Image (cartoon, one colour):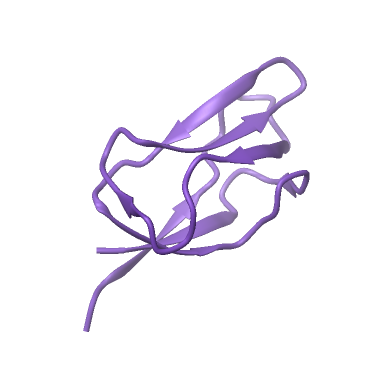
Length: 80
């Protein structure tokens, strides 16, 4: 059985309470390598690109563009 890993929303600043998902850079079932941009989020100050920290296949997206996301929430699932 393949191992899955939850990709969570990082806390980008000490005061960050949530961000809005601006865009997905990858699609479900697409191969991902560490360093690839997975998605973009907008905080009250800036738009940030969030990168993959490991290789795998993007199994599932948990949010749609425009959705608010809190730090620590699972944004997607990666299959190793």
